[in-house]
Amino acid sequence: MPLEALADTILPLREQMALRNRWLKKRLDTLLPDLMARAGLDMWLVIAREYNEDPVIMSLLPEPAMSARRRTMLLFYRRDDGTVERLNLSRYAHEGYYESAWDPDKDADQYACLARVIEERNPATIGLNHAPLFAFGDGLSYGEYTRLAEALGPELIARTQSAQAMSVGWLEARIPEEMAVYPHLTAIGHSIIATAFSRRVITPGATELDDVRWWMRETMQSLGLKAWFHPSFDLQAPGENYDKEENKRQLILPGDLLWVDMGFTYLGLNTDQQQHGYVLRADETTAPDYLTALLKHGNRLQDIHMEEMAVGRTGNDVLHSALDRAKGEGINPQVYSHPLGYHGHAAGPTIGLWDHQEGVPGNGDYALYNNTCYSIELNVRGDVAEWDGQEVRIMLEEDAALYDGGMHWIDGRQTDYYLL
Image 1 (cartoon, one colour):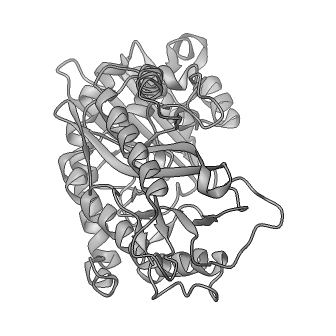
Image 2 (cartoon, rainbow, N blue to C red; image 1 turned 180 degrees about the vertical axis):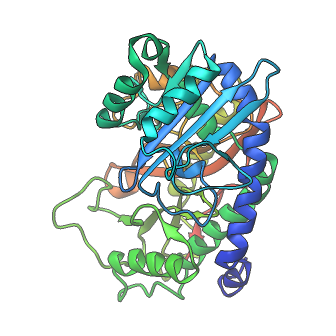
């Protein structure tokens, strides 16, 4: 997609609101019953205060809500017939999404009202957002828990348990409508990257690394996209190692192997992509064979990784199998993939960390589910004789989706270098 055409594909904020609210209504109607049953919860409470928002709360509030507003209390109760009652015990109503269950003009004590609502429904299990592993399920503050425990009393508070599985399950699950727009998001990212790796942005001998980083940041903002991290842009060349920190050359020159890492938020969903470019020397028309061979190793590691991703397997299972297979083929691999969705490093299984290639206890023991998205992030390394034996690293990251029991690239992947 040409960069000039991108702006016309970004919806105005009002249209984004309407689309996201349709998604929310469908998510509440279709996902909650099964997720609550899977988590073994009769009731789920999400309680947050303005400027101290629970990681889950904004995914449950309709646009144009931009914060929890004072204290927001959402209550989900799974009835005997499997349907879910959705209540809002807050000053500000969200009609059509939640039924208001607290009138502050008649009942000043918000927590006393919550206690009565819970007593009337008499749930056996009540999920609260405190969690031993995932930050996404750990949003209930100590102050709010203290007030809740006082309001419920010993008998009801004893029925509470961690809603970690519920919070993670809710955040990671994608409905078909969300899956359908993800190719557009990733295509936008690929278009920005392709333009960054061009003479429109880079003039060898004049452009510095930071110039490209800020061009990408400004481009995302100008398009109405929000960068969820500051873009990375770096180079490798003889004497300029990938991990060199001091006195690293900033000026881009012919013969440089370039690398970018960028991601943005649009329609509440996130991208995360890494690709490479090569600056041609005067006598070159393509990248050197030794660099092309390393990129092919990276693509092969991607293939292996994707083949190992299967519903029911844990992140650690996938990591160990992918690394073992790649090493058996003579590849020097690292894998550190993560879920993708409402957050950049999103809810779901951790599939390695760059500094924990032996596995990640707890977070890596979470299983993969259908209808989820991932950033397939990894690298391969190899010594390059033409660079006096210097180790070169190819870092790739592409977005993919798990549905119908299999993995699929959302908008393809890089198999050739961008050439400048």
